[in-house]
Image (cartoon, rainbow over the protein chains, first blue to last red):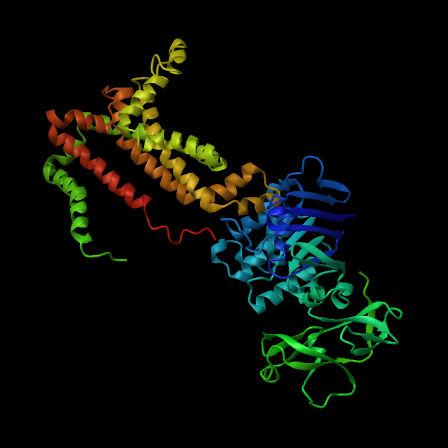
Length: 340
Length: 259
């Protein structure tokens, strides 16, 4: 009982293989332009893939033979732009049940509108909805079609913080027993919604596994960044990680001596010291040079060649690219093996 | 945007060229007897025939032109360019040429008319011929409306509707056609107006038989020497329809977005 999709869309340089267990939710995590949306649209049949193999519960929907047409796949796409139809909200939600020939389509639609908190909007037209309302209606419409697999493309994109947060809570409950793939560029969404995570970069899945594993023990700097963490990677020697530059970070656990290992931690947990300033002896310090300064709200991410730290903007204001700095990492973090 | 000043006299000349004849028509009208002239038996007969045939032709254009617009949208490259050129030719073809062409297709010795004639069905010089002539010249308006609306509409919503389990027919009826509403309305109104004003093709292919094929434009042409007042009165009726149609069909499109 599981869903497997391998899609190639040559025009957009996407070649991805995704697997989701029955009733589980997979987060497809990647930056904008990494091909997440294209992968979903190709699976749903909205975009024609160059090659594809889609298997649901052991039945090949798309593969060697004639593909099962999108309308018979039971794979519903919740598009980023909602794509509501020019009809009332109730008719939009009743669209799937009606297509399935259900006589109680209106009742089914009403029930779903209640579940997403939009029962009072039934008579409205799509143009009369706020962004958050339209998204809720689109979610109700998708679920009312009783999808065997639900594909959600950036379900919180374009919403204000409040609407996004309440829809996130709602989706978490609604997706509990649904086999679903959710694309997002936000590690928090992956944490809250997903059982499994696949990290996507340049149209390829670069890392995949259980959400807890991928998000807390990323294997590549890219996956770490998508998980909102920094990866401190090196070679295990005598209870410490030896970094390429020679710095040593004492860790707990991890693979045997000589093996490649790493610790991952949020950039906010990394300390920063400049020049000869006194450094906290409880931390392990790594000499580095600033390669980039990325403003993030009231903080600035100071990125070095090996590590990055989120620091107060006033601290970062004294830095330029190329400046010599020390990054401070707590001693004794749990290390894990990096196997390539 | 306003252009340079020397555009103004040219614009005025252009306006005069269009408006002066209309004013001339209105000035020539016998306003006192206008109602009596319009409701005279010959006039009423022509108007009633025009209305019946134009409505029938518009219905024909809707039933055939919409699928044709879809088909044209589905073609690609050179095939589409050629198909479009052929299908839209009646837009610019002299109507008398269209009438002649219709005669050689549906006339007694025409491609299809010959066999039909053998089967005892005669089309030329009947009311059916009037409807065919009107549909022939009006069809491009609907085809062009539908095709260009489809081009800007895209197919995303349709694809999403398919993932929700809808059949192609359901998608067409519930998603595509409602979205094409404004384009269909424009196409319908323009096709009706074109059908109502049809003259050359009708005269050539259907003749001018009172009560059978003599539509209002033909009646105006015949009456202009024997009864100029009646010709002008009928002309004013068609003028009012034309102005109304243009006002309806070329409304500003703002606020018609689907979402």
